[in-house]
Image 1 (cartoon, rainbow, N blue to C red):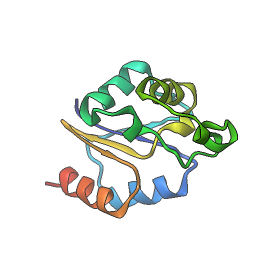
Image 2 (image 1 turned 135 degrees about the horizontal axis):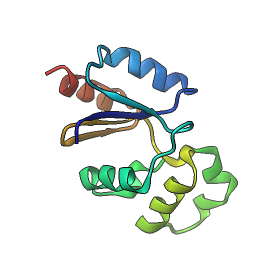
Image 3 (image 1 turned 90 degrees about the horizontal axis):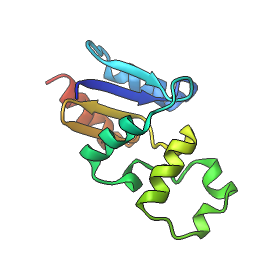
Length: 118
């Protein structure tokens, strides 16, 4: 699978995390706003995480705006929403070979950093 980071260029948190993870030799960085993720890429992430819900950001402003917090959502819904709008992908998503790290929690970032530089 290689080494890839899906992030949002306009997100300060993502920028801070990318700096913290440097050097990122051999990593492909994909800004999901200017280069939207494809269904194949999302399925690749799903094959590592085994859950579209884990990849889904419930913090996205659109989540509440669309009234999604009041609905019962299933895996297919999460998948379609992520493909529909980049804001629904929890970010950053860091792929290091066969490992995936989702989101910006301190623990996730630390574990990703260890995997990148081991």
